[in-house]
Image (cartoon, rainbow, N blue to C red; front, top):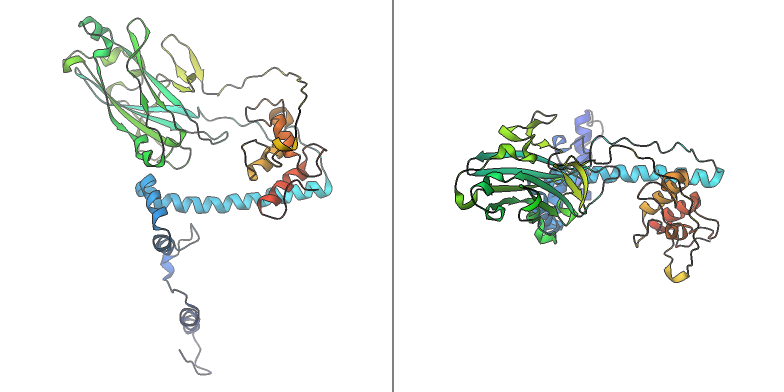
Length: 398
């Protein structure tokens, strides 16, 4: 667009000139301003057009996992990744300041976090009940945030009083347990194992339970709304499809009979997070009640653990030290820098003899001493790990 001197008078003309130059001479695409999403800071439509052309297989795999929430999941990931990198920058700056100017640890930091509820539980809803049986929706929920984590072998037990079955001359093994929906099966192509559903197991007298276990934690992840729950829909049918089922005497139905539901903050009807369908982690009661009154609160009540002093003698060699691997997971990344800083700043909780289950180990201390080796873990070691992660140095740092 040729413009003679004196003819460029309007801002719109000037903008049009710049846009044409960028398009014609530099290969830019000109898009309407409405295509830009200020919330995400990007042109989302253009992003997905690019992904469809350059990475169709990866996009197809994600769509299989997330369905109609694929777009939202990708956009959220990009936004969160930027925030993570931004926060990591602050951590690196603080490490450098401590390295340069020293400092003392604050014994009250980090403050003890208060859980807002159990991290793993079952949200249940009675889908249908009649004299022939009952259908119940169970949503195993991973609400972990202290820290957020993948957890294998989350299970729950549904307790039933089968007196009516036994009084009718049948055995508990005669009832039909039909799985009408196993959401974990959606992820089978990714190697995720399906839910494991037991036969009726006797608890005491005529009280029996069915146990459902998710052996693979990838079936229920503490991420998007669609991934933090895994629904198992089970139908319990009276033997020979006869009538006589009584759902009212079942221990696990205390909160969910007669179509009882809860409502979320958006007014949407959801199941009830009931403690009468207790949750287990690796076979150990984690949250909820058993019929005899045994209860676990899901870690809501802080416990004072006895302080012990342990003297250990570690024998190490260069062959079993992975410098920088403070959390001993076999690789070195930013989480190792975090582990080192936690152990330094709050040794009572995260030190070798700390009270937190994720505290650093003796081998972790040895691995973490990766800068000026021999002086124990310091902020310099955390900084060295971050330098290694971004490719500035190799470990150990002299």
